[in-house]
Structures are given as C-alpha cells and as structure tokens.
Amino acid sequence: MKPDESIALVTGANKGIGKEIARQLAGKGVIVLVGARDPTRGKQAVADLRSKALPVQFLPLDVADQQSVDQAVSDIESQYGRLDILVNNAGIAVDWGPPSEAEIDAVRSTYETNVFGVFRVTKAMLPLLRKSKAARIVNVSSALGSVTLTADPNGPFRGRSMLMAYCSSKSALNMLTLQFAGELASSGIKVNAVTPGYVATDMNQHQGTRTVEQGAATPVRLALLPDDGPTGGFFSDEGVVPW
Ligand code: NAP
Image (cartoon, rainbow, N blue to C red):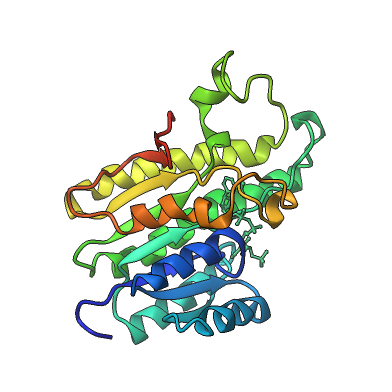
C-alpha cells in the first residue's frame, strides 16, 4: 500500500447499494475491502469490480457473527495495519406486515444485523480506525428510522405501520451514530448516518425509484469528508435529515 492510499471496508458489499459504494470508492482510488458473508457472492462481486480494474478485495464478514468480525479485524491488521473508512451498509428488512403480526424472531434478527451488527463491527474496527490519520465511519440508515418524520402528522410516513422492526432498528442505529460521534469527536474520527433514499435493490424487490448510483453518492461523499466536514449528522442527497 502506498502511503497516500486509503483503505475502506464496506459491509454487505456483494450487491445493491453496498456494492455500488465499493465501486464508487474504488473508482476514486480507495482500496476497498468488499465485506460479504457468503464467499461465493462476495467473490463474484469482487471479480465483477476487478474486471473494471478497480482496487477491491474480498473480505469474508458476517456482521451478525462475532468470530467472523474478529477474524476480519485480524485480516485487516495483518495486511494493512489500519482502516481509514468503515461503511456500515449491511442491513435486512424482513417484517413487511403490521407490528402486531411481526414475529419476535424477525424482530430479533433485524436488530442482530442492523443494530448489533453495526455496533459489533464498529467497536471491533475502532483500534484500526484510530490508527488512521482521518478515519470516517458511515452508517447506512434510512429515513424510515426518523422518529421526527414518522411522528409528523403531515410527514411522508404518517400512519405508517409496517416494517416496525426495520424502522425502529434504523432509529436505534441513528442514536448509535450520535453516541459514537460524541465519543470520537475529539479523536477526529467522523461518524455520520445517511439515508440513500428509496433505491431499487433486492431489499424492496427492485420497487425503489432511485438507482444504486444515486443511492451510493451521499454515503461515498461522507466516507471522503474533509477534516472540516460534519460529524454526528444524518444526511440525504438533499441535505440534513431530521432525527
Ligand atoms: P440488499 O440489496 O438486500 O443488500 C443488503 C446487503 O447486506 C447484502 O449484501 C447482504 O448480503 C448484506 N447482509 C445482510 N445481512 C448481513 C450480515 N449478517 N452480514 C453481512 N452482510 C449482510 O439491500 P440494499 O437496498 O442494498 O441495502 C443496503 C443498505 O441500505 C441497508 O442497510 C438498507 O437498510 C439501507 N437502505 C436501503 C434502502 C433502499 O431503498 N434499498 C433505503 C434506505 C436504506 P447477502 O447477499 O448475503 O444477503
């Protein structure tokens, strides 16, 4: 690795928005570790990105599995000795009905990935991030996690009663973002949350109205923030999103 090169980890990067974040970051010269829990899917994504001459590498990583996360830390430590950018992108949405019909197992698995997974990966990667000159953490949240927008009787999600586990997991992720941003403010490590908008991916059976290119743009911008950029914020393409 050359001294001025940055090293990034994107979780859940074998498809969808995560793969596109990896593609855009690698296109800017960042060495990107493509985190994926399934080796076949991960290696396929890496082969596709490498065919475009992008500096990417497969990193086996199941964010819901502590052993897998610990192994990833050890792999990055031995190969690169530090991490400059962490994009917590991996997420699931499985409870598509009303809250009263949600299964507790679905709620638990949603939190295991979307909240505990981000906490697990962030905490484990922090020693490597602290070795960077200007580390950035980007948490891929959702406007559906905005308590303010959901509570607003005139807001876009008024009366919305589905995906309770998913929406509340993203609210928790937003608070997790603020908590880490607060602790890390004096270290120079910036921690922000982002909503990519409604993007056509497997998560919504490609019903989303935005492309992955559009959805990845703000996560990538936050991953490459200059030293005078914000921390502890929640952003979309249009600017600040209310918590
Ligand atoms: P997607 O196409 O379903 O991709 C999700 C990615 O997360 C996949 O690579 C998946 O891997 C990975 N993943 C799930 N559980 C994992 C685990 N335990 N460990 C490692 N990887 C795991 O969905 P997407 O739309 O790109 O979503 C990416 C992020 O954007 C999510 O956090 C989502 O909540 C957020 N988001 C999406 C939208 C939207 O409209 N699409 C809107 C707002 C926010 P597998 O292939 O192995 O399942």
